[in-house]
Amino acid sequence: MKIICIGKNYNSNGDKTRPDVPLIFLKPDSAILPKDHPFFIPEFSNDITLEVELAVRICRLGKYISARFAHKYYDAYTAAVDFTAVDIMKDAQEKGLPWELSKGFDGSVVLGQWIEKKDICNQEDISFSMMKDGESVNSGHSSSMLYSIDEIIEYVSRYYTLKIGDVILTGAPQAALQAVKDDCYTGFIEGVKTFDLKIK
Image 1: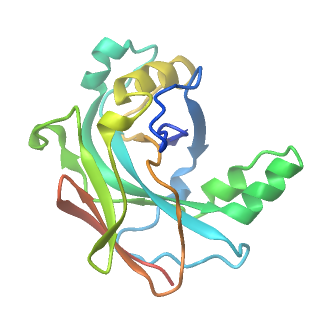
Image 2: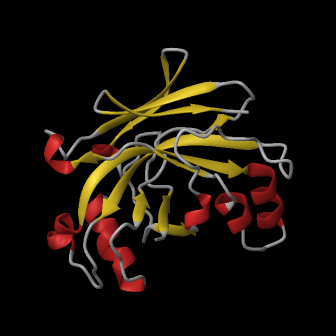
């Protein structure tokens, strides 16, 4: 499986101007944090951040998928966490180098429990959030995406064959949070808990 991530798919200042094309990057399947495992801050970074995103699960093999048919190619949603080693990313960007190491390291993705599409009433405006100590600290709505899920699938499938089990992370709606040891987070889709996460 592959994890396809979308960058800059929200605009927090309310401007709905879209980039010309979606920003795409990949994470390997080894980036998935094993279920119920804590996230250990890696020794190679001094600046790890996290953000909640809406994730979708691909359920059919597909290539060159039209947006109007894209809804047939995914069957479930979850809240996901995307970790970034910011110091490694900045260093790579300053040197004009690829920054995959800052995004694709082991454990850099949390995937919550999947919720079937049929169990989501309004798929045009799915709410997702992450809470810390009972307070929402990171949240978003799918209706605010600059590129919709179906548009993302159409674009991505021009370049990558989508396979059953692939996951698309659709972008972060708010500024990332600093990863701090002993912090605990809980993720939600439409108010339904999908994951618990502890930072160590």
